[in-house]
Length: 283
Image 1 (cartoon, rainbow, N blue to C red):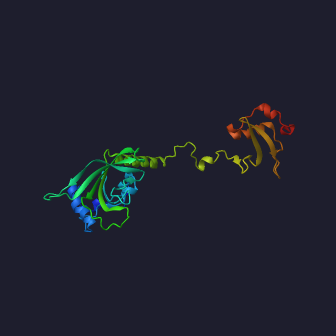
Image 2: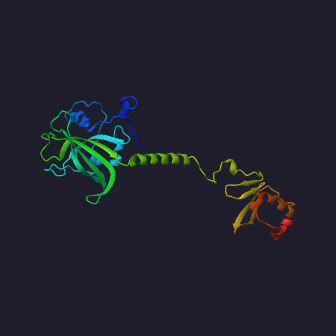
Image 3: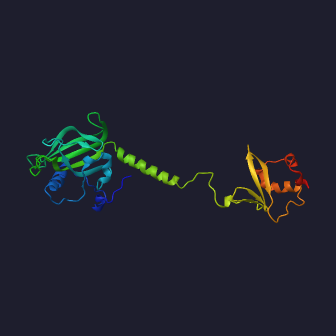
């Protein structure tokens, strides 16, 4: 999702229906020429970004405004130290010129003062790059003053003006999908959807006669018994007599069965099993 610290177009407080949508001539005369000559711009609405350091899909969030097209002032470097050909490598791909250059001539002017070039972004390395839907219109002066450039410097132009857009508006569609996906994930994070969700109350046994000690053994009214599981059935282990307790006295098989019924479905027993216990149970 695109995030900006500020929206320069909104800060202009334009009347409803008005947008920043300059013509080619206005971009060159009122913005590019004034930028190069260090004059004040009509409005500070165009960001300064070296766009050749980024892939085009990274640039919209660096613009000061826009949802379908974005404007930038950017420098240009030479491809070779002694040449005048610009370096078009950018991010993980490169920009490739398409079509013929368009001269920009203001009304009443005998000569053109600017040139408009259209470029398409290709991902990957030339000449086997993959063509994308990202388009850039580059505006430069027809006769730029490059005398101030240092000898051997790779800087070709201090500033050119670029308009960037996606011809199928895929970037905006993808941003909307990402935003919807984030909203769905946020909602799902609040829905546990789990049958194993428990509370402290759900761990408390309803039968007050049965308690679980820290060793995992069942305790029955002060009498402890260890349970072992074999193939889903339980067998009675060693019975421990606590000191000072006379619970063995007059304890017969019927009383044992009555007490053990508190375990419910946890114990699978039958009468024949208990009849084989030591004889002291039936005293």
